[in-house]
Length: 496
Image (cartoon, rainbow, N blue to C red; front, side, top):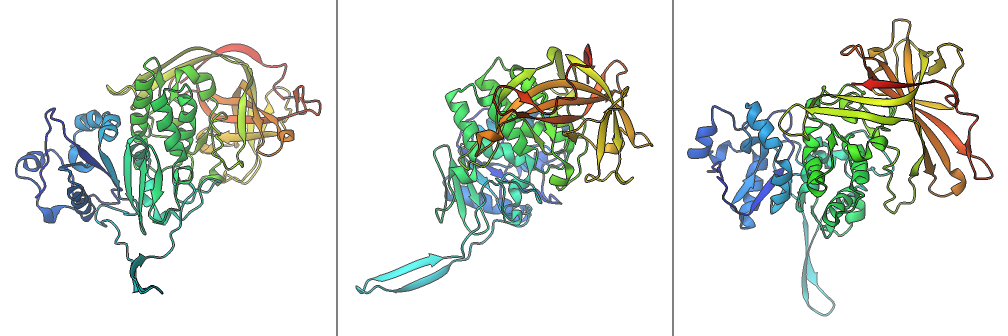
């Protein structure tokens, strides 16, 4: 028998369970069984196998309590869900240990049984020995990735690690001071000091670099936390989530940790006011590199926030070299052509780091009118071709990369073209990993369309990247001159 305990302010050591619900959750606490769960308890036979295994481990460790989200949050109460989801930072940070059902696809599967082969014998000196061994394990270089996603940091079969494809698990793992993962072939231990598996192949640099950086930065109070945040958002945006409207709530615990570390920091629907000029330079990665379509993020943030798009996003200033020496690293802003006049973001709940019910960004920018045309097949597939040209002169822009935030058909007309407003933002310096001669500048240009919700404002629909290279003297950037240089109209615009 397991009973739901209401602490009433009492303090005790407890563990947390990080698990994947799966397609069907067989046991939850709701309004109809809450009283029964807290008074009579839950029969052991009714408890899913993954929960049973977690409870057994907690008892072996000498702990009396375990926090399981599906049981400790009243699932059919919006009020209780909002209140408890806003406490995730404290729940996982204060837990003695988080038990991770790393390889369990759902709550009914239980923890995997690790089969070992027993080898016994006698040494040449006549001493008996007894060893246990199992097949060699595959070790990921970084396990925060969804199915089908591949990058230089992610190269493994995610069927062995289904839990770490889930967005909610990202903050559960990062906030926990200690995590014990139960994998398919072995256990993996993570804490602030180290990270090791049973066969001693995994370590902190290979298994959890961004987690360790974030926790180290929070402990030391380093001013680099907002920059690490962008890298973590990029990793987080790859992960799967059942309800797109949970995109911000599933990261609110980490945002709360930053606010606790820097009380003056203002959170703006996934971005930070103190680094807003750089935070606005995010772009959605091409759908062909994602493995799943770009779509709206459930209306949980303004269009100028990455959280409004269910897509893998990148920031220009979040590339961190973790020792591989293979990643490009942004060096800084060379030029900035816009100014933030005002920004507001209205939380939808009492949690300022949770869902947003809207926001308004006011910028002073150089504004250009252009036409986006589709010149590929009429199905608007990701691999087809698009051109951007000036509305008046008809001049095509060359050496540009177009990153749309949502499917093309959401803002293109029947003729497969759309009038776009371009806002020139900044020039970012990027340094290649091996050769300084690969130094280049990337110009970021915001793509906007008139808002259907607010006639006086625009909505963001994408980002245009213009490649500009350093000349041989190393003194200035040129590229064939930027198509946006020396033109446009200086104006104040509003984005919702």
